[in-house]
Image (cartoon, rainbow, N blue to C red; front, side):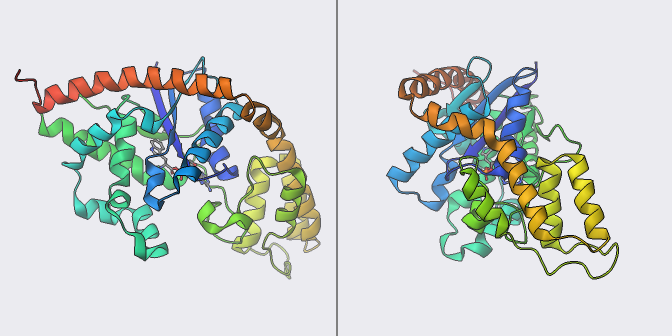
Length: 332
Ligand code: TYM
């Protein structure tokens, strides 16, 4: 069985981007592969969360993993910081990651632009830690959204460079994975870019949002004043609404509104109402389980503990082997 590794940062509640880009694939992959799914709490430290926020959000993500249908009997669910071996591997791999390539990473450049006052070294070496998450368990398939594709390329670069440096065939190449033929990019409701917490709450539909909250957000989504010519190209904000519809609505519904758009008879209010109801329906199974699981403290703890043990075992084996390859051997 191939090994699957993926994680989501603990920066708050999960949104439809996280769900369709990552989590929904996690659930489908667990029957077929040997899966490790973790909560990337160390990665979330780049933005300096308060200790209280950090531990609360880690637990929230565990609960949402379980609510989405990740089964701890099939997959290993763990918290990144519960397996500190990853930090040791990160130190080793940092010796083979170069300033130039790290500075050129798109996600890094975006973050520098968005937040020029917090360009810390952890942000720069974020892709190295991410590579280590994957290499630690010898993962080959990594279910992620489109925005992570470059990080996977860097993971292969670091792994291959290690192999060459030590003349070993140790780390395997990992590739971004999605069940659809392309990696997913879910747009936000704010008219541009992707759905993401950094674009504000109004751009995101969260899995834990109530049906009413979803209706309100979708009705306020950015659109325009409507097409004026038949078969006119859609501006980005409108295309985004159609792209969201492609994900949560039926092909017939999508075709229906596409026809209305092309005939210039579309009313965006109707499209938004339909989109909101379809989002509510699509997220209902997850939403309905979140509170129930969140209340079961014993269960959540058991899952995290079991995951830490299973992931720890795999990590300790890798660290033993890596130390030996590098030449860090006990002299006493
Ligand atoms: P994070 O928390 O930013 O995102 C978690 C996952 O959600 C996907 N995603 C999206 N997919 C489609 N459309 C969107 N609008 C959207 N927004 C978010 C991301 O692509 C990602 O799959 N660096 C990772 C966390 C990580 C990781 C790893 C992943 C750390 N180590 C090792 C895989 C393997 C990240 O982007 O987290």
